Length: 114
Image (tube, rainbow, N blue to C red; front, side, top):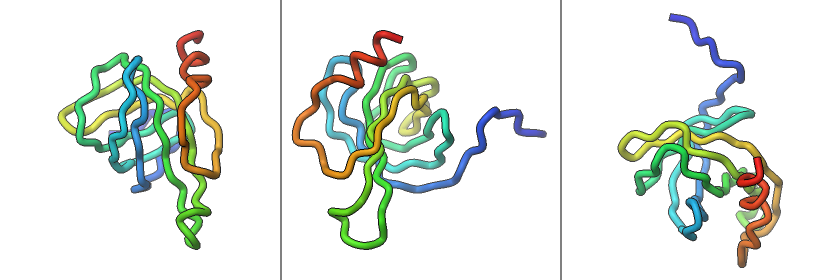
């Protein structure tokens, strides 16, 4: 069987944090299983419905001090969900250095507009 995916997937187990699902704020931790330029497969403690708009962070460790880790703030949509695994698109993203103290919803409003 051949893999006909458009984007190469990388097996990366990185810290994952779901911060918003639909209009509800969450702080659910998980781990990525694989990442591509268009999406992510992750494992988390909560089942997410297909079609749900989500905001999430993926932490990219620098290998030095955890305070220097780079976080990728993403908006996307759940496209597959099974038990504790989900796949989501990566429609909007930005690199951030610090942990968020609040969420302004700017990425959420952009994702809902598309």
